[in-house]
Amino acid sequence: MNGGEIVASVLAAQRTPFLFTLCGGHISPILVASKQRGIRVVDTRHEATAVFAADAVARLTGHPGVAAVTAGPGLTNTITAVKNALMAQSPVILIGGAAPTALQGRGALQDIDQAALMRPHVKWMQRVRRVRDLGPTLEEAFRIAQEGVPGPVFVECPVDLLYDEATIRKWYGADRGGKGLGDRAVKTYLRWHVNRMFAGAQGFTPGPVIRAAPPQPDAQQVAALSRRLAQAQRPIILIGSQALLDPAGAGELAAAVANLGAPVYLSGMARGLLGRDHPLQMRHKRREALKEADFVLLAGVPCDFRLDYGNHIRRSAFYAAINRSKEDLNKNRKPNLGIQGDPARGLRALADLAGPGERWTAWVASLSERDEQRNREIETQAHEPSRAVNPIQLCRLIDERIGPNSILIGDGGDIVATAAYIVQPPGPLRWLDPGAFGTLGVGAGFALGAKLVHPEAEVWVIFGDGSVGYSLSEFDTFVRHGAPVLAVVGNDASWSQIAREQVEMLGDAVGTELAHSDYDRVAAGFGAAGFRTDDPELAPEALDAARAAANSGAPALVNAILGKTDFRKGSISM
Image (tube, rainbow, N blue to C red):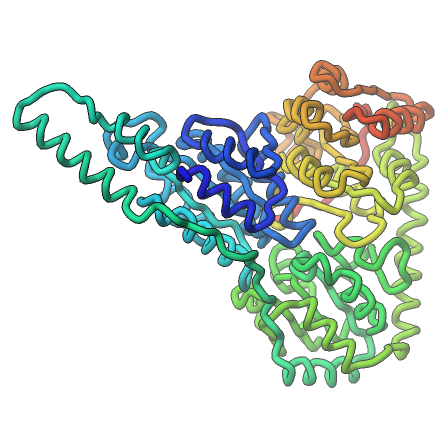
C-alpha cells in the first residue's frame, strides 16, 4: 500500500461513512484510496463547509467526522470551523496535506508552518514524518478525539508520504544530472532521506474500531447531589450539548430527566430532548426562573456569557454542575458541588437514586403559566401588521410544518434567535446550531452532514440573509451530491442583530445594511429550486412548494422578504 491507501485503510477500519473534502494535489491519494474502499467522498465548495459537515456527522452519530484538505490555504480556510468544533466539544478528524518533507521551509508550493497555525485550535495534533507512522498516528487521532472532553484533532500528512516509493524516488531526483561533489552529496542525502521515510512501511494492518468510554461521575458525589435535590423547593435543571455526546443514549437520558420531575431548560444539541410540549420543559423567562430557584443543576453547561458568567444564578441557591471538562465545571463560578464526568450518565444515576419526582407540582405549574403568558405575547406579536412577512409569523409557519423526522439547523443572528423562541425540535438530536462560538456559516455544512447521516429526514436550514452569503455556493454541492435540503432565508436586508443596537447606541448603520437580494435565483442558478415571497398571505404557499420540491429530490430555498420588528430589542450578548 502507498501512504494514501494506509490512511484510507484506517478510515475504513474505523467505519468512516463519509470523507468531506475540497480536492488538492497534496491529498489526492487519500481521496482515491478512500473511494476505492467504499467511503463516500463528498467534495464541497469551501474547506470550512467540509469541516462543518464532518462536525455535524460527529454530533449526530457520536463518532468522529472526518475531513481532508490540501496544504496551505486549504488548511487556513478551515480555522473557523475547527475552532467551532473545539468549543462545541465535537470529535472531528482533520487530515491536512503538506509540502514534501525534504522541501519544507524552502519555498515549496503552499508551504507554511501548519503546526503553529493549528496547535491553538485543536485538542491534539501530530506531524507525520515517516510512512510507517501514518496508520498508528491516525488511529491515535481517533482515540484522542473521542476520549474525555471530545474535540477536533489534526494530522499533517506530507504529500511525499502518500505516493508509492518508486514515484517519490523519481520526484527526489534519482535521475538528477551533474557529477560534481555537491551534486553527489545532494543525491546521497536524498537517498538517505527517502530510505528513512519508507523504512518499515510495509505490512501495516489497521486495528479494530476505536470507541472511548465516557468518563463516569463519582457515585458518592451523585448520591450527595440526590440528597440536596430532595431538599429543594424550587429546582431548575439546565441541560446542554455535552449531555448529547452519546446519541445512542438520548432515549435513556430523556426518560431519566422526565423521571426526575424537575423543570428543565434545554440548550444547544439538547434542544428537543423531551420532544415537543413536554410539561417539564420550559422555554421562556429562564433568567427569572434562575433568580427564583433554590437549587440549580447545570448538566453539560458552563457558566459563560449565556448565563451572565454565573450571575443569573442567585447566590443563596445551591449550585451544582456535572461536566466532563474541569475547566468548564468551574468556569467563572465554583459550584457548591461539582462533579467531573459525563452529564448524561450523571443525570441517569441521579434519576435512579431520586426516583420519580412529583413534589414540585406547584413550582412547575407557576413556570408553565409564565411560559404560556409569553406564548400569548408572541402570538399577538405574530399578527402585528407588516409591510412584508412578519418574521415571528414566518417562524410559526415553519413550526407548523415540522414533522417527527425533521432536523432543524440554525445559521444566523436575529432570525435564528427568533426561531429559538418559536420553532420546536420534534425530538433529541433534531436541532443543530454552532454553539458557544456564535459562528456564522455553519448552515450548509451542517445541513449536508445531517442529510447524509439521515437521508430520510426533512432537513430545514433557517438562514439569516447575512449568514446565507457563506453558504450559497454549496447549493451546487447539494445538487451534485443529491442532498435535497430545505432552506429558508429571513431576508430583511440587514445584519439586524448588530444594526438594532448599533443604530440606537451609535446613531449609524454603517456596515450593517444589505439588499433584498434574489437569493432564490442564485440557488436556482446552481440547479436547486428557488422561491421568493414578500406577501404574508402567500408565505405558506411558498413554504409548501419548497417542501414539495425537496421531497421530490431537489434542494430548495425560500427567500422570505421580512418586515422590521423589535421582537429582540435589547438582546445583544457579550
